Amino acid sequence: MRRLAIVGASGHGKVVADAAEALGWDLIEFYDDAWPELTILRHWPVKGDFSALLENLENYEGVIVAIGDNHTRLSLQQELEDRGSELVTLVHPGACVSPYASLGTGSVILAGAAINIDATLGKACIINTNASVDHDCSLDDGVHVSPGAALAGGVSVGQCSWVGIGASVRQLIAIGADVVVGAGSCVVAPLADGQTYVGMPARPFQRN
Ligand SMILES: CC(C)(COP(=O)(O)OP(=O)(O)OC[C@H]1O[C@@H](n2cnc3c(N)ncnc32)[C@H](O)[C@@H]1OP(=O)(O)O)[C@@H](O)C(=O)NCCC(=O)NCCS
Image (cartoon, rainbow, N blue to C red):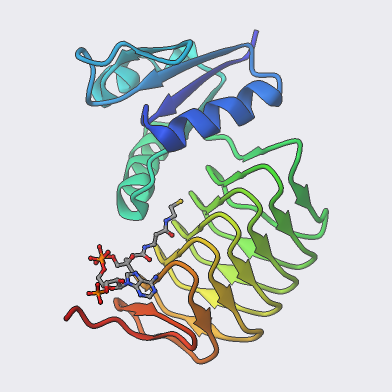
């Protein structure tokens, strides 16, 4: 019997549970601070809040954090690691990951995603549906590559950056830490830490 605890009973959590079921986890249970108001997500029970999970870690063969916010996901994963939890990495059976790529603990690779040879991913990354991370890319901890986004070869992405849905990044580009690349953007030049960029080519985002 393989039992998995998922932190975060949201839309992303549901997608991660679906992937875990496809990978043969026998029992999947959620933990979310919306408990006790929230007790079930689709057919999966929500058993308690995050502190309840910390009290029940011995009941699970695996734990994963499925929270979209990159900083929250990474810090909760760190707390679980410090408690000696069995953090797992999930690769949906419909994803394609080179045996010569390396994936950090707690990362999820979702359906249709591709990770090519010599790509390296840090901890707690999300490579979302149909995203691609090409050869020699280097992703730091807590990076999210959204559905359909494409990183060409040799791209680097700093800690907790978010590449939006359908964005594309030219080869060998360095994206800093805490960057947001807006949906559908096309990145052709390096991006500085802590900023949001949008458009084609991607430029610093300025609200009107
Ligand atoms: C860039 C982004 C972070 C800005 O969010 P926001 O601050 O809430 O911005 P708003 O939606 O209020 O839009 C503000 C303006 O920027 C424009 N804008 C927003 N996102 C844009 C984008 N990706 N590209 C170009 N223009 C964009 C809007 O059209 C709007 O223009 P207007 O003032 O002329 O009407 C967001 O739009 C985005 O792209 N997020 C990524 C979403 C994603 O990838 N989701 C996948 C989840 S898995």
